[in-house]
Length: 210
Image (cartoon, rainbow, N blue to C red; front, side):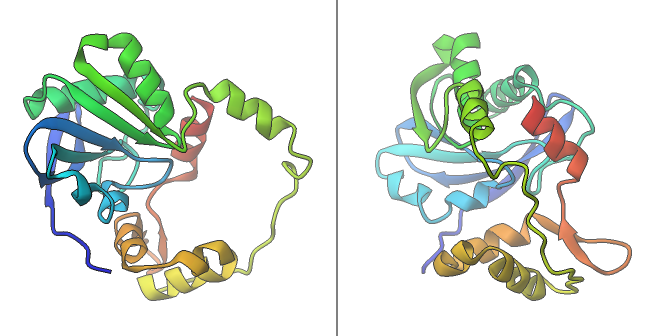
């Protein structure tokens, strides 16, 4: 797999620092928004295909990847404002918003709040209303079953990835350089020298509940 080499940069908006990737291109702006737990790098194989017709960007929301991890601000209103201010900083008056999974909430909220700033919406395996997802999850007979996984203390990203492939076999089947890159921006080494997810459980809980 040949990964692209986009411009990686940060913007200070809404009191925090957000990370984004810029693949360049000419034309209308196509802005990719990530799913739960992902960073802009998750689009690094997909996004460059559109640079012949669009200026292509991807934003990593707060609490994920290389962006800041504030203790608050994971409600739809704040996440929407993050996107608006990001567009303002990059002088993007109107954009095509393409969101994966959780980003469907932001797409729907953004166009309702700033309809003149949106050209089109693209839902990539995403729901426009989380209430439908909640209803589906509540009907899952296995929703309260906790899957026990082997205890592990990875000291390298390679060990962390090996653990993921073991615990989530479906990931092992599709693993690639893209996921190596994505994982490297979503983990950190704690004080004990263990590689852990950068997103605290408290932030994950706020995202899901908001």
